[in-house]
Image (cartoon, rainbow, N blue to C red; front, top):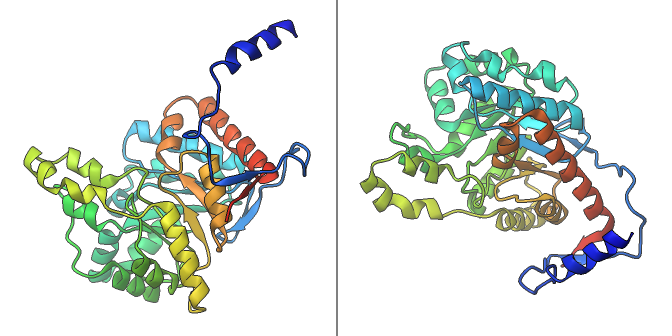
Length: 331
């Protein structure tokens, strides 16, 4: 007791709150509820019952190191009841050499959402070649619930070996939906969607839109670091454009308040989600059912042993439980 009180005195001198630190997004209500006792955070999402509203956006595959990472992430999905989207499965369209890096259904289990992933350029090319069945076979082989299509025109344009899009992404996605019954999620890769793009996506019968907002991992910046110095110098301004997650949630709310002509009814909030408080805030703001996703943070912990990742997710859930109990968002 004496040591604890002394620690309080010493630490209090260095723990003064400042206006800069103050999180202005919330009202703190300490009077209404007791501490949470394993509060139920479960949510029906993507047609399945998730135990916690967290989505893992995996970014990798094709190396032995990546296999370890994906296996750890899949274990976490099973233990905590999370959903997962794979990194690009493009390599599996050509060969099964790295199938084991992506074949995670036995680890995740059948109860939680699990989606394959291809880029818009691969989808465009497969449609052009009249080989859409290749994608259906890929999803079937992985026993995935559906397909994430990542839309990345700026990344492709900046990528030294990038593909040129011959059609608009929205037309390619419409064609793909017409030619298959697969469940589809559409996401960006670090720069988000503006209001016109969101308006078009919300009209489509998608399972969800994943924001991939500006503020998280920005693959345009990744590609610039791989380019010649002159390319990086001249085209770097493009890596600084985009829409952040809060802007996008506000735009989605505005669109659905003005029209009933929307078929997509779910949102995965990702891009710049630094903590459970960011996730909680944006989920509470969203007028559509939502969960929040993380990629780079999960990747960082998944590179180590599984216990590190497990501990991180446990604290995310504990923080969410406290937020749902004591915080309301300000208007």
